[in-house]
Length: 165
Image (cartoon, rainbow, N blue to C red):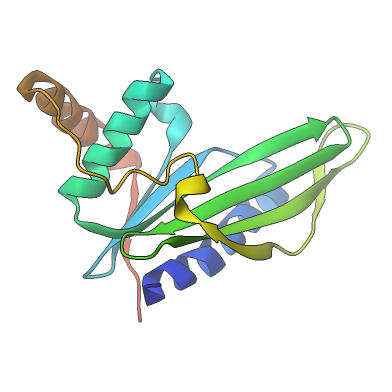
């Protein structure tokens, strides 16, 4: 597994802890890192796409930025009083993926008040819903143009930074 993938798991844990406990929000996030350490992070809900098109777009972004790993996270509600923040980190060249999960506690007003430590588990990449983003995909020229335009529109909202080794 690439060092960026392991660093990404630690970073996303901190990112979610800050968003949830510091700001009271739990967005669906997507992030990728390329071989030079450039990281891009954005909220998936901003895409406003159907699931299939969303996956095509994410696959396009992974390819265009030559990602070596990517991660996707969300809030999982089992029952009102049983909620988790879960994310998975997928590495381009590894058959395993890192899945992290932490239990979210809310007060009676539904405000987040606690988040357990993220438990890390290795699972097979093919078991991850978005584990196929590194697989080759054929897109029409018009779809590529649409995705290029969308990416340009999104850039002002995207966290872009360089990860250190």
